[in-house]
Structures are given as structure tokens and as C-alpha cells.
Amino acid sequence: MENAVDTLKIIPMDAPLGAEISGINLSQDLDKVTVDRILQAFYDHKVIFFRGQKLTDPQLVGFAKHFGDPEHSPPNKSGDTWLKGFPELTCISNIKKDGKPIGSLGNGEAIWHTDMSYTNMPPTTSMLYSLEIPEVGGGTHFMDMYKVYETLPNEIKERIWGKVAVHDATYTSAGEVRKIYEEFDGNTDTDKAPGARHPLVIRHPETKKEALFLGRKSGASNIIGEPDTELFDALWDHCNKSNLSWRHEWEVGDLLVWDNRCCMHYRESFDDNDRRLMHRAQIKGSTPTAAWA
Ligand code: SIN
Image (cartoon, rainbow, N blue to C red; front, side, top):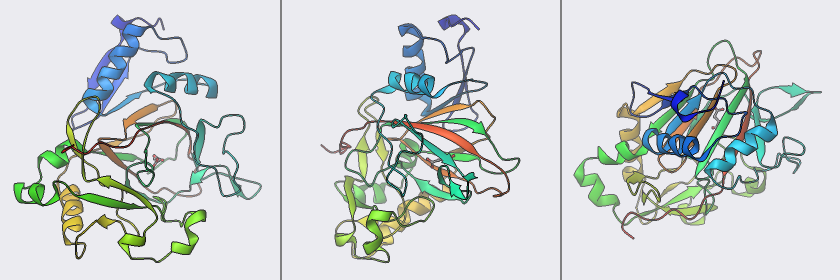
């Protein structure tokens, strides 16, 4: 397939977010006009995906660089990178080799979350390239956090304006206690929770739109200064009831890219006798800016 901007097609999903981009071979070099079209589609649709790609790890890293500086991924429990020679990539998989996992997250459900929002500078962008997929399940769902914010009742918008939330770092999205946080397991004191503090409503640095920045509902995560979790729970209820999400049905050779500043995502469980193998890159972020700043 020749790479020319006129072969490229952007096909929005029938959902608040998500678009397929067809007519492009990502293993070839991309010119600036093509990259700009892809980036614009990414800002417009929040999640974009390309089917039928055949990418090596260096090609995946090369494509990631169009979105910014690829970030080194968190190490595995032994302190090593998951993919030898590629610190910019990580492996998401349930596959075991010699009894040891070759990647993270296993086969269980990964709850709604924003990638690494428990750090001070969460990645701007994450991308997953699928190499093996299970027969059933393992789909990934994305939620439009611009629309979640926009559709909140005014009374709740007023209550959260100017507020900051604690993003407890103790648990992974698969519910495991992160090795370095073992001592905090079971801690319910929001003030003492390890992790970052971020504004609840952020302004996207590129689109300038406001988005609700929730992170994940785990551990002692909550809104600072609230006597209980009533307001935090109300925000999560709104997310769960709003029908502002879209499910990606994986095929082998999909490359899917999401904007971590305005989307949350969750991954369905699947049968552990099946194999699921994804290589993943993420792009360095900066401190999220409060919408009221
Ligand atoms: C993730 O939560 O970052 C991984 C999503 C997936 O495995 O589909």
C-alpha cells in the first residue's frame, strides 16, 4: 500500500469516541501531512485504530514518536523491562513461559482507569498493538471524559470546581498491590495514600477542552477535603450510567491509540486457556493543568 494522504480514510465509530483510520501502512515512513491528519483525528475522536498492521518493535517505537517522546514503561516485579532491548515498550499478556508471566495484567478484568494517573506526570497517550487475541472477551472499552464532564448536573459541577483528588497508587488496574506499595495495602486514609494529587477538572493542553480527571476508584482514592466518598461516588455513578463509552473488538494486527487525558479505559476478562499478547507504548506527559488555572 502506498502511503499518501489521499488513501487515508477516517471512519468515526457510531459512539461518543473512536475512529478507524484505513488506507495506511504504518511500517512505512509517514510524511508530515499524513502525520498531521492522524494527529487531528486523534484529537477529534480521542481513540483511533488501524487494522491489519504488521509492525516490528522498532517500527512500533518509530510510530509512537509521532505523538511525543516514548516513555520507559514500569518494570516487572523482578525490576526488568518486559521486552528485552525495548525499554519504551511493555508487554500486556496472560501468557506464561516456563511458568513465569511474559507480561502484565493477566486475564482478569482491568477496572476503569487512566494510565498511571497515580504519578505526577501521567502519559499523554497510550498505544496497544495486538499480536494474539482470545476467541471471546478481552475487549477494551473507552469512555469520553469530555462528555462525562459536560453532562454532569450543574450542582455537581459547582461542587467539584477547584477540587483536587488523590490518585492512590497502591493497586494496579487488575487489583494487585504494586510491589513498592505493599506497606500501604488496606490503607483507607486519603491523606496518607501514596500517589499523585491532581485537579478533578483538567484543561486538555491541545484541544483546550475541559475533562473530568478521575483516575481509578481503588484504595483510598477520593476528593481532598471531603468528609466521605459521597461526591466521589456520585462522579463514578455518573460515569457508569452515562453510556458515553465504546468497546473495541480486537483483531490481530490492530494498532490502537488513545488520549489518556480525556479517556478512561477498562479491559474485559477472558479465558486463561486462551492467549492474548499486546505490545504497548506510552508517551511522556506533563503535570495536568487545572481547568480553573
Ligand atoms: C491497559 O489497561 O492499559 C490495557 C488494556 C488492554 O489490555 O486492553
